[in-house]
Length: 358
Image (cartoon, rainbow, N blue to C red):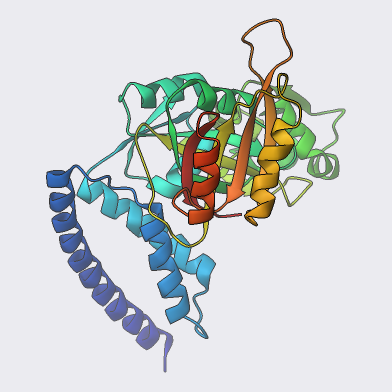
């Protein structure tokens, strides 16, 4: 078979795929009409997971694995949600940040995004109803927990809808054709540290200026207009500023990941069978010795796996008092979880149960 004949087969299949996608979207519009009449939320992570699980099983032994299916269908889901009911999403800016990239990975390129300057402003946009969803970082596997995020989860009545795990990859973007002509490289301090090996191998650091600025997004914007300059930035920042990417994945370590939360005002996921729950526990540890140990022992007895525990100061008075942020495997509606929650209901704040990714 000739190359032209193969291409004709591909064109035919593309036409069939587009026809089927349009049929899917017609049904999606009907679903949206039903959801609007019942005020049902559009974003259902557990439903999306069940679809991907089913398609992965259906594709066993074929070329498309789970990662490929997710890459295709997450964008289909995002387009579908916009047809059902367009949602406004806020994220920790600026545009082109890794938080922006995390938001687009779940809500697609077509959604209505609002870039905000601080984690608190994202929380407040959700709390006041100006947006339906917000996206904020919660932890990095190298830098640790984001204290401002868990403090605001304690302070405000906000729910966790989903988690997003994003590999942090840096790109080298420039409009300069020759590396030897580059005089200035812009990025954040932390990005320079994470890409030190690349910089030492490709540049004479005594002749090139490494200029730290407040965001990798700004670095990309500078590289778009300043001659003989380059940026170390995210893929999305380079794309938004229309700066060609010369090198991908230039970071020294390959296992740098950040976990993000999608948050909303009033939200409860149905059980998916593979869930994680986040709670805040405010125990009288300074008044009742052993109260934390007793609380944790209840999880051990119910064979519930704790995946994270962080302590934070209450800031209520001059005493050294703390509350605790806890992640564990399971859903709030699980029978064994319910028994613990009922036993300690005066000391526990439930933040959300959502599909577990890690």
